[in-house]
Image (cartoon, rainbow, N blue to C red; front, side, top):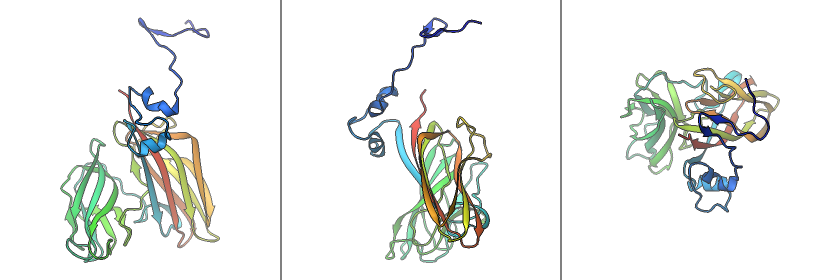
Length: 286
């Protein structure tokens, strides 16, 4: 076996592998197959948020659990542990209030965002029917991750809790709390063909004298590759009626199909916990 000496260029067959050029973040898109910034002198992440960098997109997830209690729950509006589908499914929407109905005072329509069985992002607008179940048209829903009220009556908001459930109404996947107009859920899945880079993590607990042990978890090994169903702790904090923000100088890298969520273990009843994280999704290079 021979080894390269300093300065040698490795060869694979007859092709020379040159050292990659240094990356200037202001021109980062140019280092990814000709993707271009419309104005490279502006802040790179700002340009990503403005959708001016081809192949890059910015996002965030934020969640709330009003009562962790003595035990462990995910930071999602409906509480408990997130239900995760194992196959593509048709789901249904319902409200706890009759006024969340087409033409009534509450929410008239909601928009569901989800990944299909190929882990590709899709969405569907659903017309509300109060406390009655309304089935989705889609039958290939695998990872629902957000709902938002898109039209409402005089109250300008959903008057009841709107749930996304299975058609048998035995499992809840998402919930829009009354008057919120949007789900509060830290659960997310990296879409197919993307790599996620988490930039920061914010966590807050609101119960004086009661600790909350909070964890940012993902179904990924140390290099970000998906390990289906195996949530590993990536960051951990203990809080008592306080908040913390962790910024990651080296962003947390998670690859396609990885599931992410925030969990908390409480030591007393009525412990509210909120959390959020910001990220950039980058198209995988072919």
